[in-house]
Image 1 (cartoon, rainbow, N blue to C red):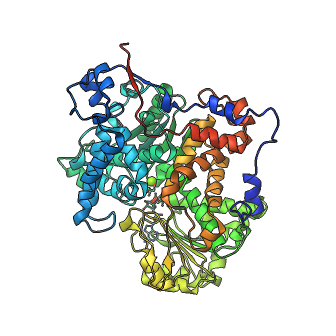
Image 2 (image 1 turned 90 degrees about the vertical axis):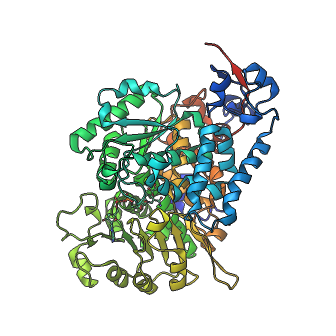
Image 3 (image 1 turned 60 degrees about the vertical axis):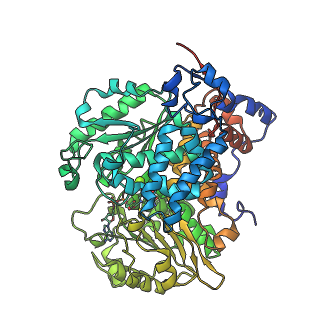
Length: 626
Ligand SMILES: NC(=O)c1ccc[n+]([C@@H]2O[C@H](COP(=O)([O-])OP(=O)(O)OC[C@H]3O[C@@H](n4cnc5c(N)ncnc54)[C@H](O)[C@@H]3O)[C@@H](O)[C@H]2O)c1
Ligand SMILES: O=C(O)C[C@H](O)C(=O)O
Ligand SMILES: [Mg+2]
């Protein structure tokens, strides 16, 4: 059975080819001519000599040929031996591998920061080589440049800061942003990741140190989506911090004042958005790690005006949907059974509510996509936050959580009540799925996991999605040791698979929004869509769900390996473009106009995406004075 026909009808309907193949469609070779990869054109630069060596976008180090050294005034500024990029990487890896001699396993070991420093220095010196290393070793180094080590980096940023990367818009720049945005040297920026540092992973308010997360996310945009590194921009919006330690830290690099709030805060974000979209009208802005109360408000404020999305709310929702659908398939059941799943969610913040809303909509669509279906879907979820089970009796209930407040009559029948503990909820509900987005490490205690043994599912699923590793609600070892080999396990941060010692392996899936945000960004960019619609996000999620074969999900593998993230991202970007075409949102991209895009078949869209994914190859450099 192919991975496509195992999907429920509703998914297949959405993933069917959207085009009537007609003879007016340009031949594939013509598609190639539309979308010649930039890789072969010389790069025109307006600098020479040391300025090139100090510019990580153009520096090649010892790989500059003697011809280029003469042409660009580099002769004598480098050791005489011209190295190939492969030789350069081999030399670099020797230095990096030296760390592993003493290091214990796992990204949480003390050498993780040392590895990050070595990679960061390469990033500051030679971007082409940095991304060549990252792409070639993505499984090994994503946990260093991204979750979980990037959390450690943000916590230690004052001490780690060497060369600036990205832009900082602060409360002291009010009225200046429209002009200061021109201080960034790139005339074209495709992707911005912006954070205000208010909720970095599960580590809370890290103020200006949050820039590390924006840099880490954009590393994946380059490595997974092939966004040109010269066209990405990490942004920190520094409106102060409520982190007492940072407010007192003499080394703190940010504004040492409490966070702005209310209209003053909004005015800063408004000014920032206006400035970047004035300078780069086609840029896409990803909001990252904003505290929940602003994550939702800013998303609603901007999503119909600008090309923006919130990764924690919308990216996470899509990844969770794909995993939840995979968990249904793993039980040998058709996807259409998803609406029968009983799901307990621990955490009702930006991520938890995002997942709940998306899961409810997906269930409703499978149940007929009408008001009664939407209402029926609501009863499949039990939500527990820091005050326990959320019911209609909750005082000062968070408006975003209120659609999921359980009715008192219902829960009394189940022997539950307002504020019931997670253990009680799991014991009474016997859920198919226990999903954590609480930021509380170890929340799924032995008692909670024992209670899950009462699940009515043949293969209960645990999604311990909080980051970084220390905040995971439980480890795979804890899950498999208590619930047995049959349980489906996914976590937000990477863990090693569990060897049961009997020839069987407990697969530890990584349920992380890294599987979606690169494809969402790339698909939106290449489609030219002026906004990121719900349909585009849903198409991305369903494409990720469809990516896994029957055999894989039956093995308990509900997410792909990160080593195939570039291929996944290509597929997801194509699905996003197809949906944008379906919704008549396409406006074209760099020489391919909307009309041409609308005539492409799925294969031609995949080819178009592939041809527009940057790869780390040294371009030929040509100097031009003006
Ligand atoms: N895997 C991923 O791709 C992914 C994506 C986004 C966020 N996350 C992670 O999810 C976590 C939460 O992110 P967020 O933005 O929603 O944070 P948040 O602070 O907005 O929300 C946290 C929620 O957890 C609840 N909570 C706190 N203590 C609890 C407890 N003891 N029991 C039950 N619930 C409790 C809070 O009441 C709140 O509703 C973070 O660790 C973040 O790194 C993971
Ligand atoms: O950053 C990640 O690894 C995922 C997510 O965006 C998070 O905030 O945890
Ligand atoms: Mg995040």
